[in-house]
Image (cartoon, rainbow, N blue to C red; front, side, top):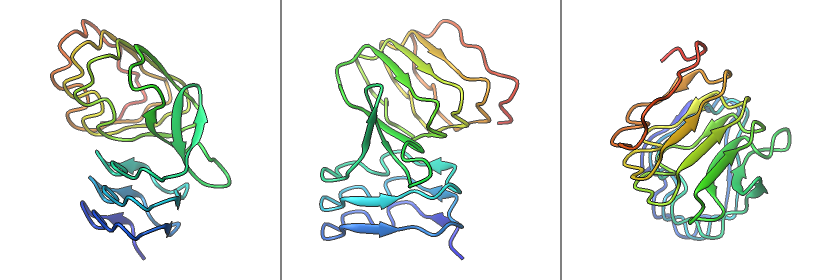
Length: 171
């Protein structure tokens, strides 16, 4: 049974339209579906707790749900399971819904507009390099439900002056 989709596994599969993932899957690694320009539908099982940087980059036809200014993908139980992008790429203030459980890696990497982010209770996993080199980011509010902050999450986000890591974070 598959638990991990390794980095770049389907990168550039331009004719891929639909993907069904097994309930045993826990990790969608870096750029797994990047460049799958025909990808429209993917169902993210409840078991997924990690979505790597660029996992859905250049998936221009991917259908997603909108909530509080964000793009989410998921399943019939929770269509907002994974936060994959803001709708407005020029927004300065971002609120990530607590309906999600995972914030995908790298989504604010090298961002030059986002100053303040509120991540609501419900989120358990903050992806790798999610705020890497976010040059104007000043504040991030982390939820008490957060369990994992992946590597390089805040690397080179030089304008952050303080952050409170919840006791719930295990690594």
